[in-house]
Image (spheres, rainbow, N blue to C red):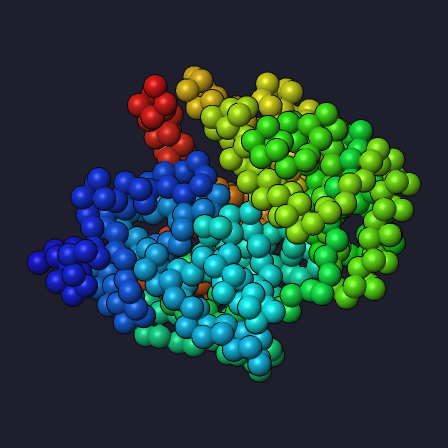
Length: 478
């Protein structure tokens, strides 16, 4: 009996799929890479996941756990085929513990839905990636997701208290718990950001934060990116760490405002979206500092969100920026590198120069407060040879960020996209230790193979995936 038939017999015909028309949507995420799975299964419980893992392990089949597919680095792409385990049906909030300010959720719970559910208790889940309307807690855990408001509160790893994980032999282990500090090695921290390479997360205990008493959101308008960058350094230099500090350049602004009509000035060279929150007295004082520093750095104007509706509109446009880029080009390649804040002007000038040299428009949106750049290379996949130029430009950008003392990813993960760049920031010994940890937890190597750590053939697989996109371009777009 085939693996597919055994799984169907165990979980039901509506839970296991192998026909191309059913599995094709699982061959890609939000990035450029593509690779078809052999099977897709949608479990409803931890016991279902155990069965899937045991059967796949027995058959020697690769296993790729998948959330909502909003990742950008190819982390959910089944590069070696095998079984994709979609967590879409494991989407229940199991417990909200108001007293201990935590919640227990299944991995398929959508990020924003969790904060909506906890809002009535005066609580929220801090990590807020731009994809939070769709991305799931399990995917956030896999990639150690960030978001605009992680500047002051930290990324996903700072808000995960415990995990339930199915290991390669089908056994279930619990890491951490519902207490703030656990004894022993931080195995929960090891699992967060491991991109599904060591097990399948089936339950997550998250830390919840209290909703702030007051919030002030300001839009500071500048004539240039340099001037806005100067304001960022000056704000941090004053000892002020806003809850969010975002920058957008002129090209990004033109597309965002045309799409959302949120009040962004498309004629500006750059804007800063600055938010402070906390106690009312504290927020008023911080807002005054923001105003003073931005004006001293050359702000042409500073606009305060007059209401919750204004604030929501500004953030909806910022978080929907990627979709707005379709007004400029049908495709984009979004990078995710980090540099020291003081190097922002130099690196941005270099990014612009790279785009001009490769004749590629680049829109810049980034978490300026922590130096997390998101240059978006805009292109049309139908243009012959365009992907070679796009990828070459992306490589130059990453190299420039590393040379400036930065790193290759801040919140999107490594996946297929950036594993070849890992030696730029880690020594052979560093990578060897990571490989040993991974092998100790998953000796089979079947969990999400070909991801994160450099592997022989990894670059070849990525190249084949990109070639497949090129081959499909005429069918997809014409």
